[in-house]
Image (tube, rainbow, N blue to C red; front, side, top):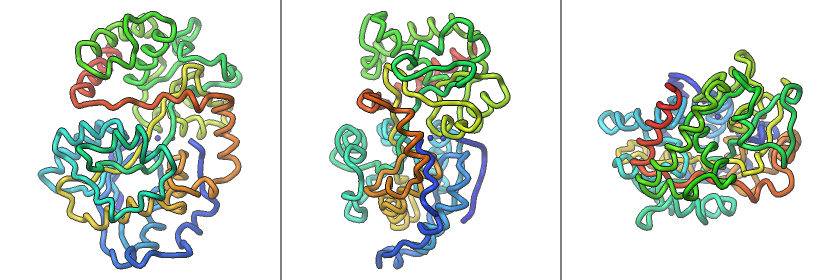
Length: 377
């Protein structure tokens, strides 16, 4: 496979699936997969070396399809490159999260998947159907299929900021005596502030209403931004990708952060824990969109289909330290992954997951402006 590497990025359950070597040779290889040789041009997240080292070779062995991989640190970077790809045809498949699908579609960048070429029954309940399925579908057509899912919650120093479920709160990020000790992603932390203020009854309208129209979004995000700026001294570093998040703890003095679960998992042997806040962890559902001018359409379908199998989903989740989307994928995970997951989400934590709402193009534009104001304050 060819890897093009601009920079870095994210996720949960460090699923170095029981021997990815075994994943390279599934017991049954679909005849249609073998018939689909060639290559597929894929743009996804940076900072996950096992994708290139283990996952893509397993996929190529199973299907004969080579993955040409371009890494990007975040979704805004992916969208910018995808827009250029409308002229160059550089990419076939990109891997955003489901709440972004509307924005990709409204920009004319994606086409619908042919579900007859996939295996929709492979997916675990709630990931390709239900609310997630609604966000993935536009005018009755499926524009997104899942690849893995995970959370954004609190990574904390067990020594310097001990906490536990039921006590840990999004409000901790803004606490006293934490000057220069907190790391956050700009837009996520504003949403965290908004949700925390909402839980305290300090907003004029529910925070979720800010995703519905521009006027309400500005009203609520103005409040969250103003309150966040009061606590700007807490921020040791803003992160945008997985490597930056880890660096905030390892080298820049952070003892508490709002991070992806991959950060918590990767920091677990360095004295850090990962816990859902009592307001509920942010949940994300990541997956594949098919570029409107994709050159390798059949191969793209084979990639999405393979990742829905238990072997493929376990491999993909392993690379991201996240959760598999395919039925049976969890059975291929190591016990340490389950231990991490159970510690992070005890009791009723899973029932409180706050799935990122659908975010239209106008919302993403404004969200970026608020994030810039927050970082520049």
